Amino acid sequence: MVAFITGATSGIGKQTAIEFAKNGYDIVITGRRQDRLLVLKTELENEYKVQVLDLCFDITIEKDVENAVNSLSGKFQNIDFLINNAGLAAGMAPIQNGNISHWEQMINTNIKGLLYVTKHISNKMIEQKKGHIINVGSIAGKEVYANGNVYCATKHAVDALNKGMRIDLLPHGIKVSAINPGMVETEFSIVRFDGDEERAKKVYENIVPLKPQDIAETIYWMATRPAHVNINDLIIMPTIQANATTILR
Figure (tube, rainbow, N blue to C red):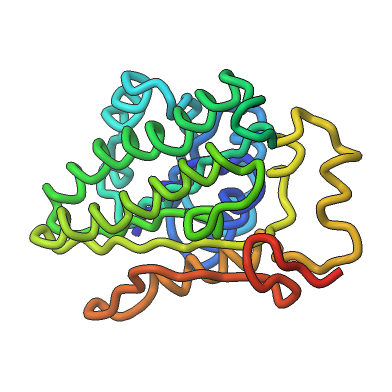
């Protein structure tokens, strides 16, 4: 079986690729950093003896997504699982002070990128009459918090799209699921704060957040339920976090 994972160069995406590979799945790993993709490809193939295809492209460019999906051949043409993991937060400012380029970056990646990949992969799944799409959302798609305005809006869009996909793809026998994590220690905050590692480090000080492996293991669990079972929507939080903003430090 084959899993197609977006945003596989770090964090949840990378760990999800490892989780599926160690369980014998062949993997398509995608991202914008070719060097990281090649390193991960080599590691997975050597460690787990699976076949890995690396595709370097930008999910925010629809034509690049189409070309990448159309380039799939052999066993990689039949995608069993699509994990829509690629996403980001950029900036953290009140709406009146928002950086337009940050807004566009989040909208293009979190919404448009997910849509482009889903459109092209779902059509392949429809042809083969099976498949499972797992969308990585966020607690920010369930709640709104101060200075998270546009990021929260994009993740609320993912929440709505997940529900819409579930309805639209039901007649084709395709499962659709969402996992919505709370705080996970990845490169997320470094990206959000434009590379400011010191500021990002403070986000996770004096707490035990979720790790990418926690999310990857849960995604794999969702993917391996019996054929008659679908996990529509799942929220996963670290024990120290009650909601988006209530954290025990």
